[in-house]
Length: 74
Image (cartoon, rainbow, N blue to C red; front, side, top):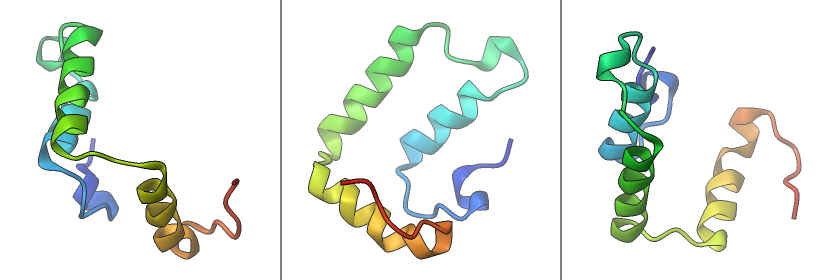
């Protein structure tokens, strides 16, 4: 599967990009072994990069036109 940057998402944290790529691995042995591993990785990302609802709305607003989204749901 293509990495996030190859799909046009160039501002995603490397740890998130790596996690998604591992989850999409064809080889089962290379995927995360448990959902707890996935959750722990996401929890570390959330601690390192706090994300508020305001941040999320600003992110979606900045990409709405490129994604073909006219209005967001508030």
